[in-house]
Image 1 (cartoon, helix red, strand yellow):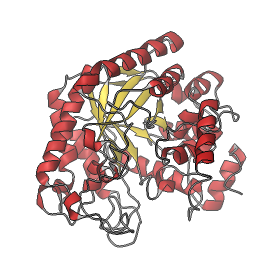
Image 2 (tube, rainbow, N blue to C red):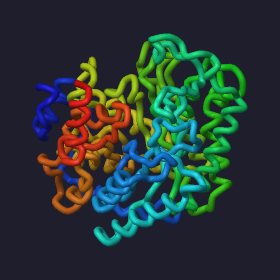
Image 3 (cartoon, rainbow, N blue to C red):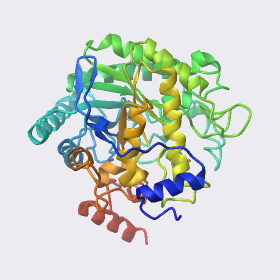
Image 4 (cartoon, rainbow, N blue to C red):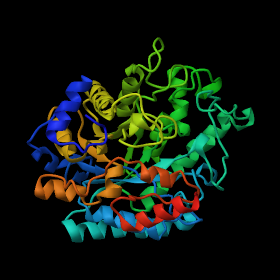
Amino acid sequence: MTRNVPLTPERFAEATQNCNVEIPYTSDISVLSEKTVIGSKTIENRLACQAMEGCDGNADGAPGELTERRYLRFAKGGAGIIWFEATACTEEGRANPRQLYLNRKNLDNFKSLVNKIRETAIRENGYAPLIIMQNTHSGRYSKPHGVAEPVIAYNNPLLEDSGPIEKSHIITDEGIDRIGEAMVNNSVLAEKAGFDGVDIKCCHRYLNSELLSAYNRGGRYGGCFENRTRLLRETVRNSMHAVSTDFIVSSRLNIYDGLPFPYGFGVSEKSGTDPDLDEPKRLVKELRGLGMQIINITMGNPYFNPHVNRPFSMGPYQADEHPVEGVARVLNGISEVHAAVPEIKVLASALSWLGVVSPNVAAAYIANGGFDFAGFGRMIFAYPDFAKDILTRGSLDSRKICIACSKCTEIMRTPGGTPGCAVRDPLYTEIYRKIKNSTK
């Protein structure tokens, strides 16, 4: 079958058979309506909006008009969790000049948006979602002024094929200490802004994630497992001590980078990019031991191998595997980690490519204990009320789903671009058209 043909249950079965992958499927999706309790918080269903950056904040880091538009659309959509997008802990850690950046000066702006999200959701659906803010430093992908100003843990020739980044950009241990302190301060501000919790972001090759594979780095943040995971573990622990007991401290964690050893985390030391999840399992166990109750798991690097973390039908290159193979790697890898640490609640990724069969696949995994929450990323740009349709009509509308065409990413990679769905949302159709016309 062609990769670009929309999935039906029959085509899904054909794809998994042809690719020799195992992905469960069920016609009973009632489990997606079940409530879950995390600490003092009740989550109304098993559906989540993943963190999707809009690159549409104001210069001071506060949410902009398009930011508010997106989140109020998500609020109306009925998901039990809204995983709020990457929000920088320092000015120099912003991935672009319009990335959100929470600080004391704009705290009230964030507080206002969080209140609006809750009020809108309660008015529309009768309940408020759990809202978790992603707390980040962009590391090697920092562009606070629109040009590259990388902060790297070590030189990586796979990611620096045009020439090595100058060693002056390798952050010192003392610099990492300061970023850890900034992240803890950001966790405190997130609670003051009214979020239900914070995510110490450790995925997609941003600084915290890159440190996980710093095998050849010296000092306190490189070499052994304890050192490579130090920033994440200490920031989680220190954030927990700095906030109230009701406030959730979580992480969106890469369990597999898809880069060969010694440049990737969660990969075999012996055979290229084959997964080896022993260290990720150990890390999740340690995070659970610190008191973490929910974790958001992902894979890959959207700048280098996006087919690993968000399998696509159309994109910047032709992947050497069928998208269903990428979906299987993510979902089955997440299930393997959850089986090793069943005490922690797990939010999954990489469901959007599955389209109309995604509720059936998510429900099967949840019913089998593979994970606890089904997270949707690109889908929410195209279909912000996806959760409401799943919960009320029992299915997704094929006329509204994400078609995995990567146009939202194309907008994001354009300087000044504010990503959204160019196919389903007329506002972003026009934004995409202007970008294409300006690059002719």
